Image (cartoon, rainbow, N blue to C red; front, side):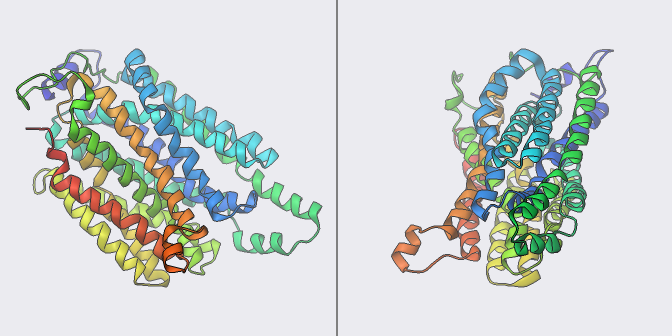
Length: 441
């Protein structure tokens, strides 16, 4: 695979390895900015559209379900357009999703907001399907986790900045505004206040749309090299004795799809739900609106650690084992603590989660050869975990569950968080220890 990548980089008109990574870094920055503003959108839309927590968490559902629906179609698009043009097209789709926020805000329609989020997710699905295998196979597979960690830094720097920027604009004086809306009895006056709040989101998303289009043009005109995988030998290195004829003959990939599913679920919980968790602990919205940035700063520390240690000191599977164990420890720590200590433990989940994506991805696409694009699409489908796990979390303490029925007591947000997160980290630990080996020999 490394030879394929190296040969594809040859030629006078193609970008150097460093230049290619720089362009990809810009893409991952945009990806992170658009993705992690959802942590701010959840409390914003909860106020502007008068939602309960389960309804507000549909923000993550609409956004991440687009990956599940469109990942496989995205692989066919990439086959037609190639990696570079596919990446440029994905940015244009994301820009369209951003512009849908304008009529959504003007009408204060939660349905339109969800539509815009779904379209953004569709663009990101295409971008993920193109960019992740590209980063993995543009160099030696043994150092893929290091390259993905570098991309992760770009992604999480944007993710740490975006809640601060959007929060300062759309949730300015949020606590007092929330109280003013709650105390206003006149329906017309309350509608004016809500309309004014909703309009705050228009200008930021116009700017996002413009930047996305400009970056798409830059990518389209760049000398980013195309990497061909269609004719690559899927069994270079003789993993098994006979050639494989179907993507479903790679069990380590299919187990990896589930691993991506639960990983993205816990990542979204740590990043997007931390604000509502803090609010449930009694903290003001003026403070909790910045909590997503704390998680992403912790992820940055994790990515830097990965760049230093992988593969020189840690293998990709060992880093995944350590990350899963830390995830369990920090989740249990959050459960048994209160106040800012609990929030700190949830933010530290960013550190635990940081190296999971960089480790899972190359372990799962190992020597897929001509199946690389469809395998990557299946992994991108796993990103739907970010849609499902927050809904399970919201449903656990907002509705009557089997646990409530058996024990005649309600699950509070702390129990719900624990029950959602720990099983996911246990599965990730299994994949790190044994799952990634299934079918490789």
